[in-house]
Length: 181
Image 1 (cartoon, helix red, strand yellow):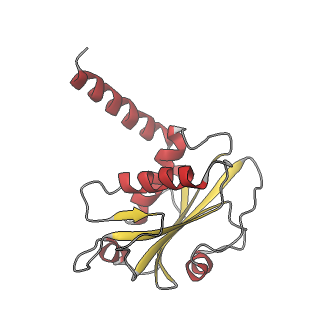
Image 2 (tube, one colour; image 1 turned 180 degrees about the horizontal axis):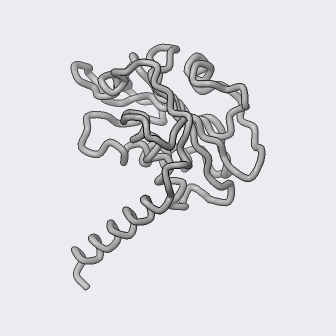
Image 3 (tube, helix red, strand yellow; image 1 turned 120 degrees about the horizontal axis):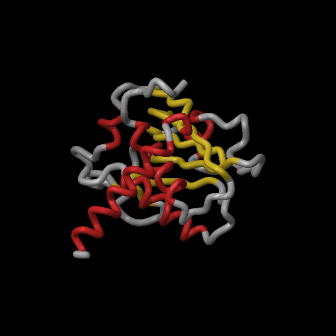
């Protein structure tokens, strides 16, 4: 089999598996400002790197490994767009907006709370699934947020987990689906 055939088959399998996951795993999509996408894309700014804060570590892996998985999953939602997600302190980060990805935040956690805290909230492991809350923030104010759940048994190498993060990021900046509340 040629390399091109293998790539096509791999991409087809990945897309088929993404469709099989179902939209009901992503819910509670809230748009606080309708033009959030214009804040995401770095038009007119010196940098395109969005600071990304990660709260919680549901898999107990090295924080750098989790950061790599999260940033690459988010980035895969915006291939070819003028945006990157930086999970480490570096030069050239945008100072107008930031993203927070919270795994197992407390039940009282909201987009407003995680935006104000810039990722400095607790994480509480409860139940069979991992609650994930993402918020895209301007200063300490959410522009858009979304929640999801994924089985706790999955890990960072599980394509379900990676696709979920990608789909959440993609959905944050798209129209609301009929399966979301």
